[in-house]
Image (cartoon, rainbow, N blue to C red):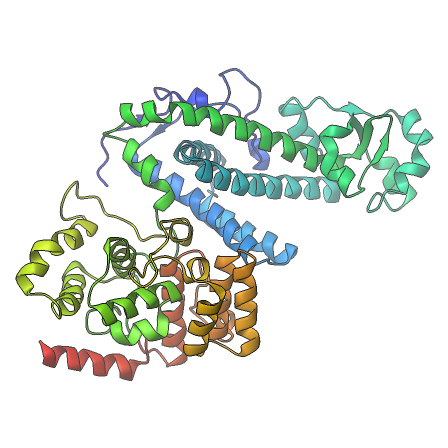
Length: 503
């Protein structure tokens, strides 16, 4: 991307994305925890603007993926720490703070547009905030430092500390709270705070605090729940305010950041970026000659259905061409190979002239060669799941786990011999519970045994993006076949030779 000069966040009406200037907050950035109440005033180039946003988007999508996979808490924390370190960390504290704060406000602006986007952003940001705050609380408890106290003070949390006399009066009751200080020494050194019980409803529901006369008595380590609740309320309010001014911001910044903000939620951040799925020979694994072999072996169910629909009908409706075409582009299929593959199928029922007149332009448009020359990104799972449902028997796009009924999905999984009967029952159970991405991840798991233990297989994004699924599958089979590219090397080589003979 060419840089069209630096961008200051100050000229944008970002006050709608935070609080009015002068409010306290900024948080304790030295502890990597921020309430994001103060509007930042940074200079960013267009490259930095996009780079910062995508860095944070990777972390938030990692959070969503891990929640979908129901990882154990320890695994969740360790993998999230690794993602934060890889994407939101810098050796220089000043740059680290700038990256964290700027990326939050950029995504806040990008995700305020619709109710679904706001709900998704709010959920992931609250999980990230809580993770960081729990880490700060844990460090404070283990080292006896004042990190959490400093954070609370810096952000003007008006908590009423319990006096020593009152603490002694309630000592028996406070020590009976499950999970509280275990020894008399720990109890003496634990600071308690008194807050209205309505601000500690999460703790009350889990019986993790003592309540008396409408006041909850909360130890310092459990203040996290109260702070996280306030963060959620403040962020939710700011997102609602931002939604009201987004149209004006996008209009005013139409030539600079407007398009970036509007397309941010559809940006692809996982593995298998365009031209990243390579064969053993160092060339793109996915071409018009190899797509048949790779479709059966390495494409997720949604793309397999589009592929089968194309092979059966020799055409795809508009939504199907978009979903499948952008997937092929994202998996590394070049414009020339993309055109050749579609032309080969479509011209079974029409002439080459009809294909060129009706479909060539849209393929070039996908690849950024026509129209406004934007480089469109492949659809992620959320976009596919919440997109327009397909018309039965006519269209093939969408998510089979979402849009197929139980009987048809069961028949399809059985036909494709996906796992055992027990495996298919688990997939169908996830589908019935509305956990469509978990069903897709289970499909990958049973189709790629022990993939987590295979060197070079990146499972990040599997169940969240079809291209991540495809990339991980190609890597898996590549490793299993001793370095063959994607489908077994012999299969791909045969298909390449047949393709060359046909041409």
